[in-house]
Image 1: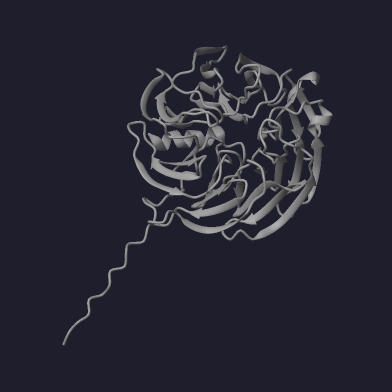
Image 2 (image 1 turned 180 degrees about the vertical axis):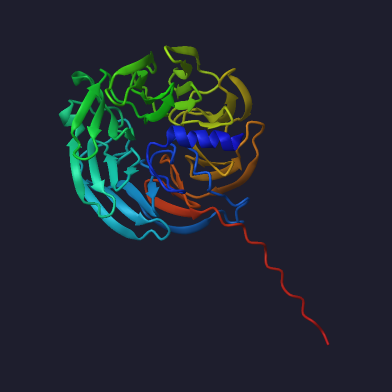
Length: 424
């Protein structure tokens, strides 16, 4: 049953062509937190925690890495430049570097670096900087192919924390949560070759949620959470196919991505918003329920597993936060781990890799029956908000000081037993 579900996920979500083991965009090859089906994890870790393959300094920003063809793309800020670096994934060797000036200063949050995860597509890398600087770079050399200043082009305000939504490619168009509501450019489609504006749609500000692709009722939908709405967009034309209010005005954000479960869509936020569960039918889309229970997450996207959702209920800044698994159809909690702490999640080899914001990495069984912890280690030493990336047995984690590459697919080595000496 699980194999069938994963096969369907590959058909539904794979809008970015990738090789087995690639992690070419936010939340992995299918943009839903699941690693490729051929990835494996060691059943347990060595006594000191996962093996450190390599590490290096990192600048400011919360952008996780993207990985393709054994090349990892790091997007961060050092001094007054946003920097895109291509690294050899298994060694950390710098292959190329591209730098762009930036003058953003954090207001609500001291972070001044990029938040949006890079996007790798074919032989291109797309990055969306904290000030709305959208760039297309050559994947092999780092040479800039085209650039757009979206805040200037579409009269976008600065927002609470700058730009934080990773673009998506659907049907050979780059779709971006721009937020140009004054120009009916809440969502904008750009051409992949030159960055030309193909269409613009919706009068809404941007959010910190990244869109996903869904194939429903014989067609592709681009699913966006904007500042105040959950919307289904026709990627060809920009026409709004459905729209629901989602979010609140004031000092609030929408940070988690929408999640597709069959014909259903789930969305979540904190700040009194809670969760939304709806269904996309052939001729109509309807809301089934919305509630602050069982899950209202500040910015973590829950993982779908066998029809259940596993995620973090609560907020990082004020707590408390629990890890919870629930049935979205009934809202029934299947299990929970109270006071777990805030974290981000991904699934590999039927196991959860959970990176807490205090730098703790937890491995647990992916199950809707119970929570079973398999390993725990301190891998970073400061507040950790960047999403982890997993590729070919390597886990990439970073905070605003350090990037680490951890090896997780090697079995733990048994202790060496001294040979007994023989006596004559």
